Image 1 (cartoon, helix red, strand yellow):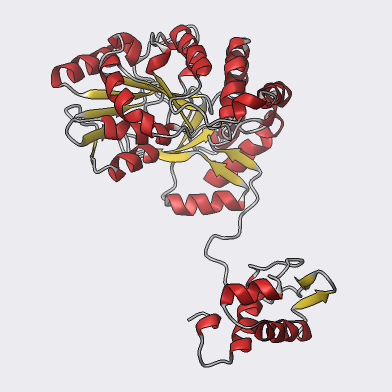
Image 2 (image 1 turned 60 degrees about the vertical axis):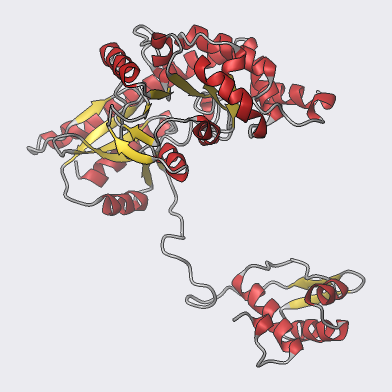
Length: 442
């Protein structure tokens, strides 16, 4: 029962208790203005006299202060004693993160904000263009630029008409799922692809794992698992042949393909198939900033007519201004330059982190202890020898100021701590390695 519906109290006391509770709970903060007497009376359908009596009681008790010709404002309240008012939920208090080994952030120095700011300002000067909604499929010029980019970078040969732009992979999958007329069975390689799994489950799909006979096969060949393993060409060809024989559709989430070894590039499934039976998903958020939500989907020709029939009913979810800015950013060669820059930066940081952890490992080795550390494409894995649960390790990590990417397990049941080098600053890598050493008692 809310205070306003508590019929055991007089009407003015109900209003008084309603606002007092909002102030005590922090919903109305210091300096917040209460609705005017006229507004409150109209909203609650009560007399102005009743509201005035409630407000006067709040002022008398020190909850609000009346400012002539202005209204009633919440006063500064003394800090609540522990246990008073609203209880904080478990885990509500955030620990300070000093060593961020997650893959959800990026290095502050890796992104040139000045360049991107220049392109955003240029886009915002296109007044007439910004007065209308964006194209449902994405801005034509950006789709042209992306078609040229993916052809050169991933051998994804396509026309701009085949590209659909959206604010993230989930938005694109929400457009794709209703277009598919196949059996509602989709296979994922691991349980960790939560975003894709959630969308397909919401559309009524039966979720399988590592099922090559499923009607829809969702794969991320450039990062097959938490350890960053890349699917070799032989397996890609085998998958394409089997999917074609079964009539299955492959969804290729080409996540982190830009970070592959440039000396040994592995072609995309879309490129190997000639664009048949494969939907290609790419993202610019990983290359730019996580907050810039721009992803794209390349449809095979057999789905293009279906999209032309249904896609027009979906509004564009990505920012029109950011699309305009990204188009010119790509055309001026900044995307390619940025890929080269962050590839060098992230590989150097991964190597430096590996060496720092290895030094900690060698110190402990003298005591007869061993620890398995491996460097992958953009991450480090450390075999966990403790029998602690993921929840216990996460809690202990937070106490040390550590946030890690994941805990994963191999086929033999060995558990590994996965550390990403993306957002960790090079200057603090040595002390970060010491903190990880303390966490795992290396």
